[in-house]
Length: 363
Image (tube, rainbow, N blue to C red; front, side, top):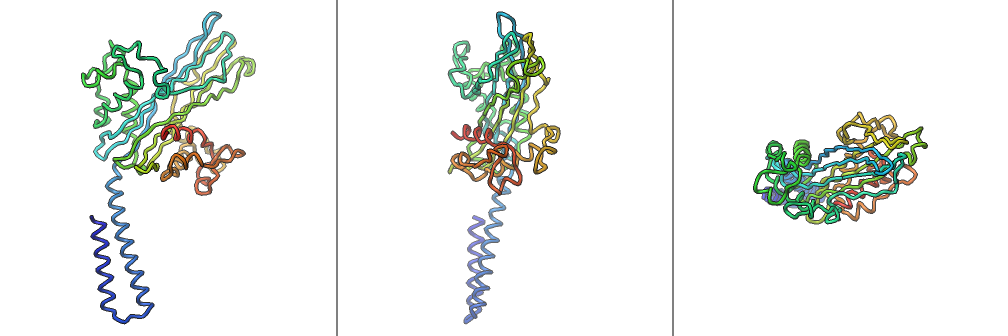
């Protein structure tokens, strides 16, 4: 409405100027037309700014909570190197309440042999990707699969603030499932990691361009980044490493990206020739949270840290579709960084996994 009124006023002003000028010269007419266009542009810009300010409170957030578990191998049983990373993506209104929520878990489990070796050809799917293959339904007291319960809990927190999410009660005597009857009928599995991830995502959400009626999506992509197949290759120790890339994406009615967030977790485990498995880090800190501590700046040819490059690339994707993301050209001889000059000055690191995660989110 403001935009329409501004345009009408600008038109009336132009008409008044032309009427008063009578037989004005071409130069005067050109000046008047330029003035009219400028007025219209200013009015449009003001209206757009007003609309943007109104939507500025709509924020996109993502957070990851990880835990590791290990067991040693012996002659009869394989050991394991496992990381469970729970990720929550949220769209948050200017009142601090969740508008939309998506949940997933990257459960990357690697079997370790008695000699400390492991299969480096293993592939990983998130729990949302596994769907019925996760095979929880048979053991569930409510007969629901993991993704069904996760989706029900994600719907349950819509309308809540971070504080209200943290206040959700769980039953320690029943797998830490929620006690509220409104959700207990649809979700009985542990929600403690969900609660923490959702609360963090809501608290760290930022205005990145999303609108309240946009569609929120979440995609994960895991790569096996082992540096040693046999323990002997690494002075008696093997290294099991899985890197998971996360993409939180919002799109408009035309399928164009309005906001996106890129993050990554790296889980590393040592294995010995005796089949002993040890997690290298007590806690898995996402790269976005590490900031300068990740230590990429010195090695970067453009002098930018990982999170700076990731944020620049994520912002560059705004306005693009899934097809556009799939068509992004990368430099195979330059760490698979993007070749487009508009982003190459701000991001030179590998973007293939993030692109794959975005494509999964938008599939």
